[in-house]
Length: 131
Picture 1 (tube, rainbow, N blue to C red):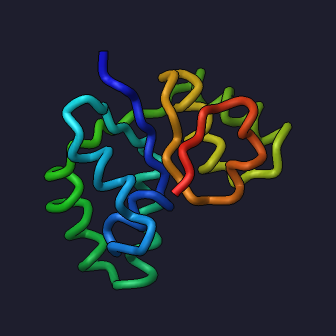
Picture 2 (tube, helix red, strand yellow):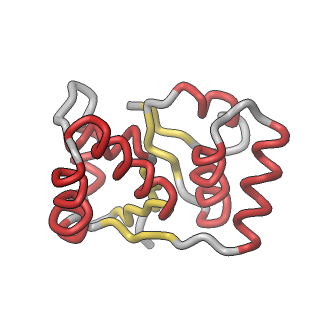
Picture 3 (tube, helix red, strand yellow):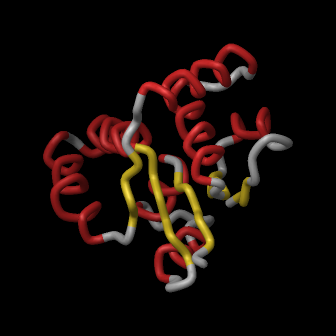
């Protein structure tokens, strides 16, 4: 059985920008023993951050060319997951989008790969691999 890794926007952006801490993301994406996943809202968050930083055309390029070339399974959001993310938001001081990543990690029994300090709030609830 493959190890499940859930990327958040922080991790994917570190990889795309080849930041100093991007190697664990690169290793996860290239490992045949790992299933990399990402919640659709976190993909959207990555898109809007790229759009703000690099412009709409580069964000579209990410969505149309780069993302489909990466071994990342997009996880859709349903009503059950929206409620779980809402429960997490009510309990922990995190952004709503990060709550969706946490809810996805819980549902998929995946380890979140991130460097976002907001996830320290749910460290006892979810397995986290820090960049």
